[in-house]
Image (cartoon, rainbow, N blue to C red; front, top):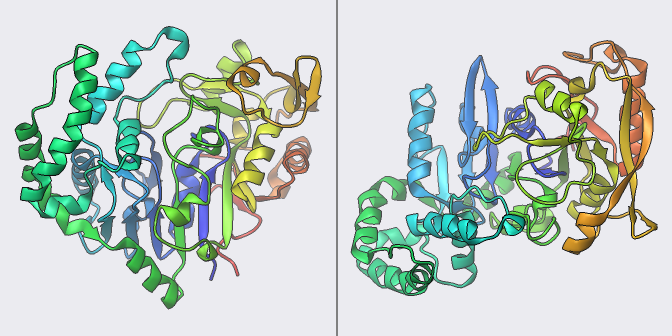
Length: 431
C-alpha cells in the first residue's frame, strides 16, 4: 500500500481541505508535518463544517490515528481550544487517537508579541504579511536551540531555566522596540497550568509511524501552505517560516524519505495569494474580482481576502520539479465556468529576455511580466461533474493543456466544494 504526501503547488489555499478529507477516509494514519496554526483546512463532513488549523484531517474520521509531527510549531492554547471546538461538534478527540510529538517546539505568547511588533516596525513596502501568530519567532527559537518543546512540560523545575534562557534573548528585543517585557514567572505559571492537559497527547511520533509502516498501514502526510511559500524555494522573504515541500514530510515526522510513495500536488485551476509579495498573473480588475467572488476566496484562518489571477504554469511546473510531485489534484475548475476566454501563463519576460522559470531574487520576482496563451472558455456548467464525459470539451482541453505545460498528469479533478464531486483518474494510494 502506498503512502501519500499532500502539498500545495502554489501559494496555499488551493483547496487542500476537500482533497485531504477525501484521502483521509482511505488512510489509516494522518500525520501533519510542518507549519503552525496560521493556515488551515475547511472540511465538510455529513453537513458539518470543520475548520482545522493544527488538528490533522484524520481527526474527523472514526478509527483514524492523527499525528502532529516534530516539524510543526504548536501553540498549546490554540491546540486545546481547537480540541474543545472539535468535541463540541461531536468528534471523539482523545489521547488514543491524537498524538503530539514530544519534540515539537511550542509557540508562546512572547512569539506573537514579537511577530506583531516586528511587522508594525516594518515600512509599508517591507511588510511580509504575517498572521501575527508567532510562527516565525517560534521557528527562530527552534533553530537557535532555545525553544521550549512539548517534552519540557514534564519537568516544571527545569523549565524555569529554559524560560530564563529564552527571555534573555526576547526581552532584549522587546525593550529595543519599546515594548513591554515578558515576566518569567508569569510565563512559567501559564505553561504549568496547561502541562497536564497537553502531556497526555505527547508521544514518540516517529515510533508510531514506524510501527504503522511495519503493519502496512496507509499513511497520509499532510502539509500546510504551498510550495511557493517555502522558506527556501518560495518568494522569499514573503514566505512562511518552514519548508512546505514534500521532503519535509520525512524530516517533520521522523520517517525516512523511502516511506514516501506518492506526492500529490494540490493545484487550483487559477491562482490566488494572501498577503504581500510578488504575483505575476494577478488581476486587479473585474476579472480578478469575478474569480474571487465565484471562488469565495477568503482565508480559512484569517478571513483575509485573497488576490486572484490567471493560472501560472511556469510557477506550478517549478513546484512540481522541486517537490517531486507525482500527480496533481486540480481544484475549483467550476469557478472558471462562463468565461469566453482563459489565459494561462506559459513564460515570463524579464528585462527584455524570455525565461521559463520563476526567478530567485526578490527584485526579479517583482519585475517579471507574464506571457500568456489564450484558450477558449466554456459556458456549460462543470459544477458537480463526476466523469470526464460530463465536462464541456473546451474544459477538457483546458485541463489537458495544463497537464502539458506543467509536465504532470491530473490524478484528481475537483468540480465542487462537495467531496463527492471529484473525478478520480489515479488513486494516489494504489500500489
